[in-house]
Length: 308
Image 1 (tube, rainbow, N blue to C red):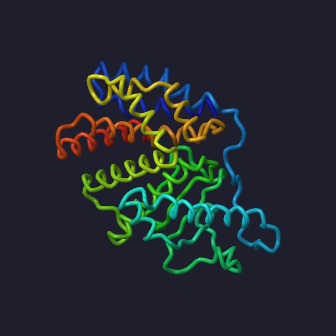
Image 2 (cartoon, rainbow, N blue to C red):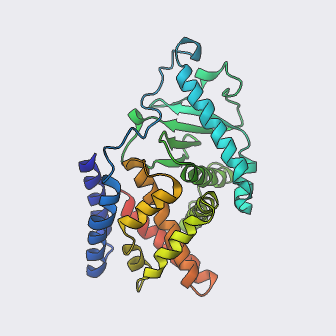
Image 3 (cartoon, helix red, strand yellow):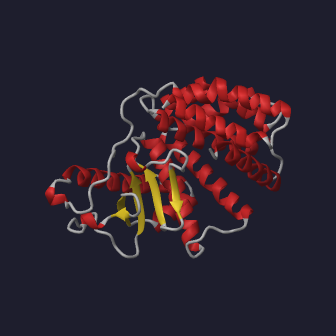
């Protein structure tokens, strides 16, 4: 696990080097070594962070031995419904997402397709034709170089790694990814091809995730980000490089993720850094156009950094 993360992050650094000046290159390498890798790999041996290791066999129904899977999916569907109800008042966008996905089909990734027909005899899990599908990816089908939580355009399905996550993070991710699904479905199931439109959607959903993390932690999440902002650098990138492993471990404590493993930590990193950067930009940019321009530039940079 430790070696895999070193390889993944080293690949990301190499990917980014072509677009970095010498000073930024050195800062990025130091930050990766002193903050990112210790934060993510310093927890590799903690308990299992996957609630689903292997997908059930398609030919076996719940009556024939898959009661545990059915119970788990009942729980996950109930939790998602709970999150949508609990956090819909966070913002008008959250309200819109919760209204759009009052009903959904839940399934499991079995490799080449999703499996929902297994639950055809269960009224709570039975798929409906018009529902959005939310599919959980078990450990055996997880690909380390693929996104952990995303909307798959080809399958028209929300894909969620079957990780054990604390409520604030799980709720934030659910709203963020369902937000992308809502945008895609409103464009005939295709994400807008224009990069600026994609970036604006990405920015909006990260900011929504931040608002939900903050509401779920009774304001402590933004308080921590604002404390981190006191170490402001000369540029947004220098400010990001001042984020320490200690900062990220404190965010773990705030959102209740101290027991999380490496995949959990990588998920926190991928959400927290853009949310923090956008908050900095809002604090220090003069007008709306300047803020959007800087956020688009940052999200492109961060995507190049984390694409590995």
